[in-house]
Length: 230
Image 1 (tube, rainbow, N blue to C red):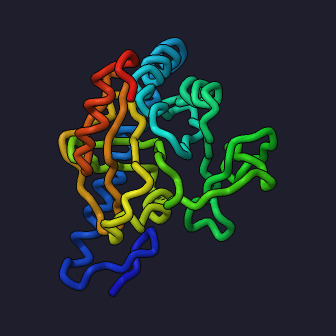
Image 2 (image 1 turned 120 degrees about the horizontal axis):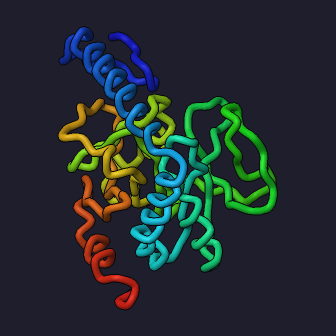
């Protein structure tokens, strides 16, 4: 058997040529979707970020630890929502690449910052840390998504490795995985790989979309509006 990216081993039931073709197709889609994201800049990006934050408000009604991310210039900027969460005294965590670089751990957002290998700010080493399975909600960036909650990321595999317990521990559904995206990042169908971990829902500037987990309760809460908070 041949070892492919993400540290996974090719299935003996599927020809290696098929797997490599799938990866090549995903690489082409990544290039297309990055171009689509790059077209959203300046004032439009700021407007859509504010709309996304308004759509994400129902997340603040859920108690517990919430993880967000520091957006790159191409990603949906969740900074407005992050600030709102801190104003409401929520425990906000950010992802940090583990030593060795294979998965993520999450540190609480505080006053101390460091720059990681990609030049992205992370909470400092002295801030409290939390393993993924003890978070309530994790909001993740993405390049593309479909109606089934499948997610295409940048290809590093960090979130898939970190959330791998979600694929085999059906009794432990934490954390809830929420994709953050522009509506234009939706595609009709995404090819999935064995290591992919699907999203429970996706939030865009236009609203909520149920993913792999159904998320009927969350969609009902989102539709109810701020005057019907639970």
